[in-house]
Length: 259
Image (cartoon, rainbow, N blue to C red; front, side, top):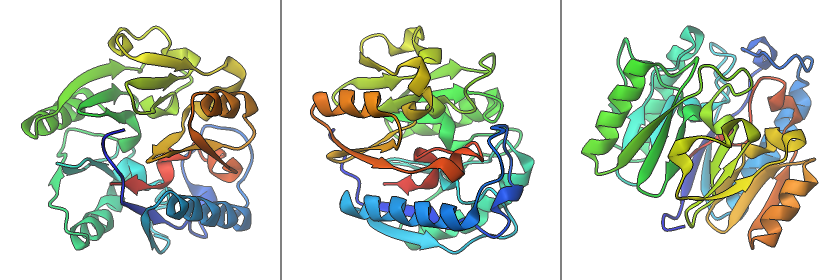
């Protein structure tokens, strides 16, 4: 993997975390356990070599621990999004300031465009842009134009007819070395031709939302077949409990902005 991550931005879940958006029907999250799991996640990022800044809870926005949706970051670009859920659009102001405090010059998605960072997957100098219930055509077009202005290439993946995936990265991860990890729902996407594909078994499809960080791959705990497959490919796998965030439609990538 040619790009080395150095920093991560996270935000603690707040006392109103359980009031956020969810379709998971897995029960109400336990805030105390969520805080324990979040601390373990941040410690794993540090073990991967990252400097981690954790923002305090944003009690005005119950979903704000899922910071990935608020920006798209790369070596050359910092693009603050406009989340597709209206209740989340107020999250971006504080994230913009935090990124500027770290010396990042920001651009932004504007109305009528909407983009959730969870729909955006970078594979070296190429970006896959998911069009979903949260990222609309206008947002995808704006983001694509901004990324191409920075020298990247882009392609669009429409998942609006997919009833399983909330975001593109709910079923997709880039592992480096032109290798993509795919949930079954994305197995036949034409745009992924030319990559080596690592296919997740249907019963472990939630774990497709994993995160490659430098020499490590973070994987949700409880999915031994995927973890074993990744170790067999030579990755250093770190498994993490994520149950309380899954109850709120979240995954491992959702909990940080990495750059």
